[in-house]
Amino acid sequence: MSSASQVAERDVPFQLRGNSFTMMVLKVHAPASPDFFTQLNIKVRQAPNFFRNAPVVLDFDDLPESVVFDLGAFVAQVRAHHLLPVGFQGGPRPVQEAALAVGLTPMPTGRVAKLEEVVKGPDPRAASAAAPQIMVEVVHRPAMVVTEPVRSGTQIYAEKSDLIITASVSPGAELLADGNIHVYGALRGRALAGVSGDATARIFCHSLEAEVVSVAGVYRVSEDIGSDFFKKPVQVFLRDGVLRMEPLKTA
Amino acid sequence: MSKIIVMTSGKGGVGKTTSSAAFATGLALRGFKTVVIDFDVGLRNLDLVMGCERRVVFDFINVINGEAKLSQALIKDKRIDNLYILPTSQTRDKDALTREGVERVLNDLSKEFDYILCDSPAGIERGALMSLYFADHAIIVTNPEVSSVRDSDRILGVLNSRSRRAEQGLEPVSQQLLLTRYDPERVEKGEMLKVDDVLEILAIPLLGVIPESQAVLRASNVGMPVILDEASNAGQAYTDAVGRFLGEEIEHRFVNPQKKGLFSRLLRRSA
Image (cartoon, rainbow over the protein chains, first blue to last red):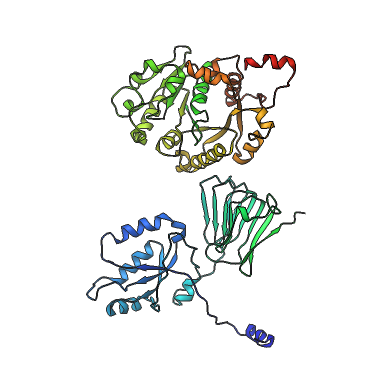
């Protein structure tokens, strides 16, 4: 691509690009089962931060032709469990029509990769890409500020915002943020910035003694953090898909 | 209104029961009416350390279950006025501790006592949770080594999130550190964490440093709280800690190695 066409591209009011997103697939076996939502609730509660507002694709492939259920109510119930159905796959024709009618996007049926118990958080922007009918409002969310030491075993998640800790983070504690993470103390636990996929997120800390640092799922464990950075003020960020560390200059 | 104190640590074997016995005795010696409760259901030890094991008829669990009156289960210490022990059951397990039952017993005790000291079991399960749930103040017992420090950190997190004060959004449980089994000579050799290392990680005020001392085991074996061994370092350190707990300003002792003159070498046997 020539530089001339790049300039021209900036002048147009939009840019159309392809992108791929990781999404969870909710395989529906028995939508009318009285246990369906009790069990979904149990699953969601195992990792509430991970599941909260995660886009999901409903897979109806396993449903028998004769299935009868209220799809509108079903989708509303799934939403009530903080999952966002954005599309669907397969299923008997009446179910597909009902799904289209409630605004779900038909997804191409392919082989679904096995989802592990713990996977990298899906990108919330996926919702807008996969389902244009859902408008994502970009609003400024104030950073989450924690002034107390973060103790071992504690998990803090700053949803759609930055996380600022003005104390130390103990070994065995875990910080998660969709945005940046700042620690104005020693970072001795785990810090995962950009957990929903924001590759521009960074981690800043006064003293890097972390067990794990990660940006947008790219991580480095304590063993691989060079001694040059250990116990130093450091920022951690992604460049070209590689996790990088740089000393913070303190004036 | 009485004050509820929990003696807790996360890790086992760091000196919770020894410290509970010493601390409760120290508070009673200062004239406060004090009861110390054993929350380690199934692994009853406090009665041994307090030397009242032969007088246990009814216990904490009997009172919770309504099988005995509180007055029947409370054991009055023979040495010190104002000091009572509420032993636990050796035959039951931690599931016998119901929140309602514990609350009822604590409410009844608080009508009579100035201080209620809860001796927590190790771990972060039911027994430990019940012992800290109603606490106003927590004394975190820690040894100068990394695993104990990490477990203490964990229990501080539990106090800040799962105690009654945390759940009801009240003023948080106040917390102080009691660093036990501290050996200044081994610290100097780098074999143990320094006081400052521990304070840096836990970031709570230091209540006291109890030196490693043979007097502790000796006292436990004869069923005497070590604070009553006034000649021992450990006993004096507990006395200091009780004073600090009550708001007195007392300089920390037993933090630095003793000067090694011929004289002190001869006298060291008395530790």
